[in-house]
Figure 1 (spheres, rainbow, N blue to C red):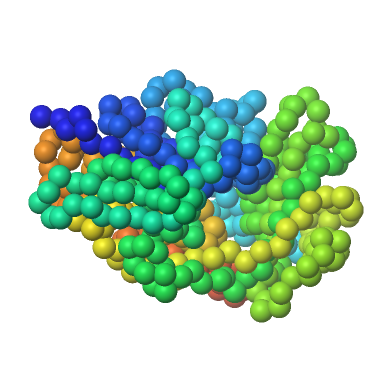
Figure 2: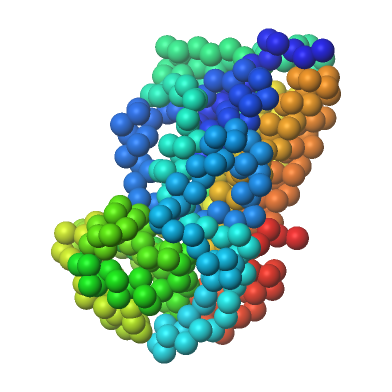
Length: 410
């Protein structure tokens, strides 16, 4: 008989937490989701960032109702047209000096989506408690007892009680640190430095870029430097109006291996970006020239859990998912896809406990083993691919080539 009192507390309202909430709602299981940022901060942080979806789409569709999966197309960076299935099935690797195609890296069922649009869609019908900064996590029941947990937010001023907790609170997860300890949960900074630009251009310039780039994205190597040029059919991160190319927002990320810190000033960062772009073939050379002095730019090092360890799930009552469980570098486009699989598997696990009277600990142990094993594999391979992308001699032997591209690891 189903446990009608079972209550899942979800920490974090990113894509992972929202997918879990949708899946549990679809299954008729009570869940409450808590987000550390205020609604305004939450919406602002999504920005124009884009992410790649490919092998995880069936997991997403399994978690959400039909009326949401039918709208998944609306989250794409260019939702106004259908991608050519042949061209969308790979990501080109381009010689940055000549523009010649070096390789086609498979990405089955690939599509590029807006992080903000995806999150907005997945939040449909979900009540999110904003402004809830996690302070403490407590396991209140012993093994064999009915599961009970308590979460304290905002210094203890807000107390939430439930049956189990899943931490979907991102790469710097507080729930992860509770399970493995702060030192074991520490992230490592990547050796690469990224300059990230979101830009608009004149209509003529935008059309030139669109006609000289791949519809989902492309990687472009020049000696020891690498550009990840994320795009879609119209070479944009957001097609605001398909009839007005001057409104299209383009996303670029330039990275190179360096121990040097980036310039603190945005003006100097733009100058550095333009200097690097000037050494490339078209359309990169022109992009560098056309980026205006008021174009936003950011510089950062990505972080990853290089020393990932298994976590103690407190007899199945507390676990983690998505970036909280396996924060990885973006160079193999596996992060969101693994997160979606986590969400589907966690929902299935809880359904088994609630409706089939399965043992909570052994069921969540099996979920954790999958999340940990997949996560560790992709943390390692994405770090290897980062190094390959920045080394002309080894890129063709990197994990993207050896493992069959961006598809699901085997």
